[in-house]
Length: 326
Ligand code: TYM
Image (cartoon, rainbow, N blue to C red; front, side, top):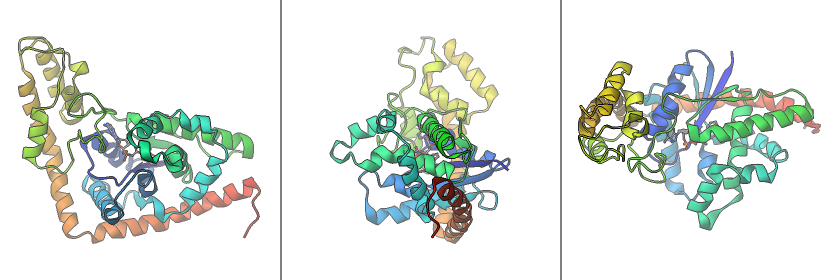
């Protein structure tokens, strides 16, 4: 069975961009593939973080994934640092990756601007560790949001380079994008992101979600209520494509273009559809938070299985590299 790998950082609240860009398809892919989903804690320490909160954020992230529908009986849920082979393979990939390749990564450039006082080696090496996360399981598919496509491309290049130098070991992984691979923030200018604080959290209560939607930027070209709108450049419409039934989204598209509905009406429909999907997730998350044992069990089980998969790959890798057996 072909494998899928994807990961999420335990950096704080999970937002609706993470959910519709990545997590929701993680759930559906588990029907067809052997899926491994990681809480990537080693990636999270590439920027300043609060050590006291990291353990809790790691559990909370796994808990939210389960609340979103990831069933540990149908996929493997793991914590990256529990499987040391990720970092081992990362080192080997470092020796194959030109510095220029990682320096040109958009995320590295953005994060270097955001964290000027701490541009560390890990920040630069981030996509190489990401390639190791995927390839240590020989995963062929990687469901991610659009911002991660460049990193998946680098994983392909690393796999190609490794195979050319040492023989065929790795598949060339492909990114899988959802129907809403890039959700913009509520200010409409930047990608929705935990660090920028322009997000709608997946566990936020109704009044807070409505307040953020009510004031969210729409199509800036539609100044008056009577102006015809352009759904293709409206972030609210992108969210409709993710949360509203196709037929409803088509009608809203028509209503917006003909100015028969206004932005606030459109937002009310979105709010209703969004909450219909998010409320059960919030309820499930609260109940798992009160009794987190199934989450801890899932992570333990995930570590056991993933260590076995990763050890198999590393045995092969060490062999083709010419390393002496211990
Ligand atoms: P992270 O935690 O930043 O994001 C998790 C997933 O959410 C997607 N995403 C979005 N999708 C649509 N719109 C948005 N505004 C939005 N914001 C975030 C991201 O694309 C991602 O799929 N580097 C990865 C973590 C990682 C990983 C891996 C992923 C580490 N190793 C191996 C795949 C395979 C990341 O961005 O996490």
